[in-house]
Image 1 (cartoon, rainbow, N blue to C red):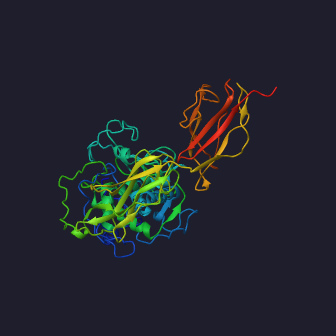
Image 2 (image 1 turned 90 degrees about the vertical axis):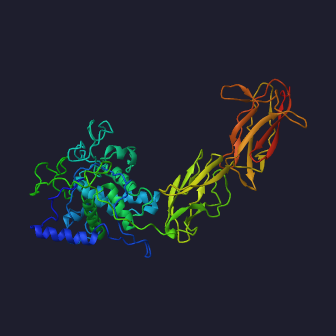
Length: 552
């Protein structure tokens, strides 16, 4: 959003000099060039530049809050979790809003661990975009009591974005407006929207949905937000404005030093912003004594265009060294991928990231994706996982678990967010097998002509002496002789329509390896007949059936 200058720089500042000191101090220590600590030292300590030219923005270029955090250190987490605000009011985050940020961090840590998204970054953006959903004015499900809307993006002071949602989210069928606590324009929400509270809906006015969507947006491509340059690029992609970046960075650093939970609806709400829906609890009665200034002509809003007729050109950067340039990923010795239905694959997929010299490259984000007609999944039930290569350039996918669908499918490994060839692996799931099958009792099976057999046929299958569950079995009434075929007379089964059939397929053993056949009927021809049962894997048993009239 375009910055609103003239806003409070620090709550309680009484002079321009005090405000200037606050801005200078924060800009000097937390500006775009600041470096975040890496994970364990020795990491990539790049500094930030401007956002890439192909970065789209997440919201329209409507106003955002330029209030800076207090200069005092906030209370540490947990110091006031259930009581009204204590300590610095600005440091408190409403309970539902804080929970949404932390839930989004946990969700993305599972789906894209390489991004290393901190919830404090979501909190900083939420503070700047909507004052933490208007001070936490949300219902029990996390949805704002009324929509939070940015100004109409009609080109008059802001970007020109014609309607993309027929007014479904912003109520405007002519132009778009930024929507919700994280201020997404509808067209961007259509791409990045998420269901963060598992209610089956993707609602930009729900803080859980919006926070998760913002997290995915910030993690786009192969960004690692523990690296300062990547974090700055992510924020600039949200809103390409250095003023916006400095403000978000200030709140990010502030929340990292500590915060505390406050009840929903009691958070500090900044003064209203011109052009959009008033986010204060009492519209028109904001305590701000400073009138809003004209929007900053430089920034753009996510999804919108720049209003700066002379956009700044980022300083030239040195090309990366060949030893640091990713050339692609390759198979790192993965063997044949085969498993029986329901079992885990013994082999695990392993890839290696290589640089332009052919050497290993560490800290490369790799995404493994299952494709094809299969119900196989990675450990935890996931069809896609993203991991990072280690110091030797390799990364191993989680255990692959076969489902019940047999046949071949593909697993692809690709450098996340890069236009480089993928490594494809063919995996095969074979049907469950049995090497032995036998009746569970030895009762004689007899019936009178035209009657049904009183006793059911039950068999049990095993494989290498162990129970063989879920094994496919075919039952056929066969003729005598060296080359038996399906018999056209004698005992028979009935299908669902009551018609006579003498072969049954799609039978399977249960969890105990047993199978009880449907009822068997005798026709009017007396004699001795044979029933053959064959399992997947080739195990066979032949059972004798006798049709005879009862003794006089």
